[in-house]
Amino acid sequence: MNGDDGRPGGPEEFADGLLEEELRQAAAVLDPVPAELVQAALDAFALHDLDARLAELSFDSLVDALPVRGVTGAPRMLTFRAGEVTVDVEVTEDGLIGQVLPPQPARVEILGGPQTTRAPLIADPLGRFTGTTPPSGPFALRLRTDAEVIVTEWLRA
Image 1 (cartoon, one colour):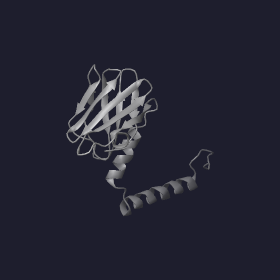
Image 2 (cartoon, helix red, strand yellow; image 1 turned 60 degrees about the vertical axis):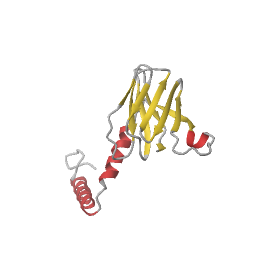
Image 3 (cartoon, one colour; image 1 turned 90 degrees about the horizontal axis):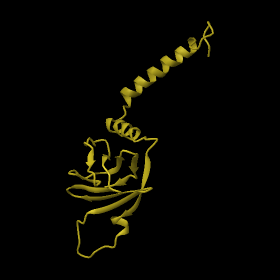
Image 4 (cartoon, helix red, strand yellow; image 1 turned 45 degrees about the vertical axis):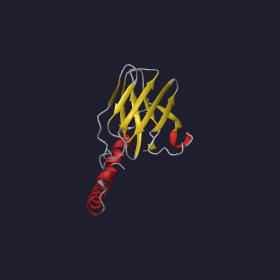
């Protein structure tokens, strides 16, 4: 709607804006958004890499491996593929061990829930990386190589 001088922002639009702001303030006081949900939304938005390629899960030892009688607490083995790039990951109680193939240096970020504040892992020239904290809850990996950004599918630890 145009104001009296022909520009947008007449009295009705101004009143609507005030009403909207009052409703926002009332909702913030009476029904606030939990901080964990806000952080999860921010983390999800941070994942929005338009140029990132999705690495699809091609092997998960929880699903694809044959069970071995008497073996408990075996590490979870995961393989992700994005074109010519493969990421092999072993998730244990002590952390995470992985390798990028073909071998290349990369920065590996473990993406997770609201409590995640981990430093990125650095893959050496042979593509190997390790982390001392195992992922908990839903997680994904974001790899940044010299050539591209790759994001894995999300999994539950």
